[in-house]
Image 1 (cartoon, rainbow, N blue to C red):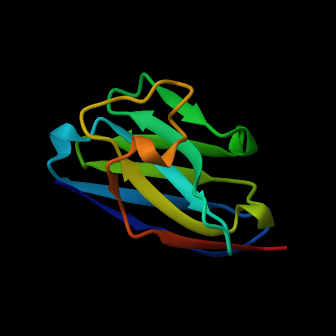
Image 2: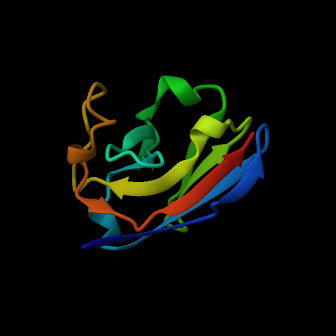
Image 3: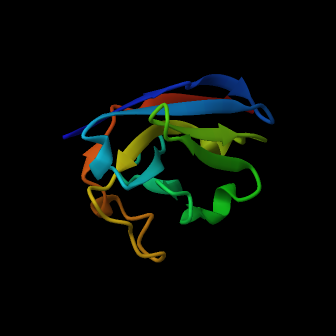
Length: 129
């Protein structure tokens, strides 16, 4: 079992920055790929924002965040980060950390929620215009 705990959310003005953290615990060996998802207000769907493999060889971003967000990880601390710059009101939502179990998604599938076996509880991000 893998447990994920997000932190770092908050409220910022448009153009501001936040850094989210995801602490991975439990069966960390099986957690081979970790991604951040966003669920907008009133929306059911979760949108893949960025993903990273344990060895950092496979790193993907949604088009909407390329050039603004950076995903990284510290395997020694079992932490995955999402650095968010130039935030926009449309970035507002609940951000979730998700992990696969012993697999790395194909490039065309990394953004699909059904690729992930484990999920955190989420951290809220609000960007004011």
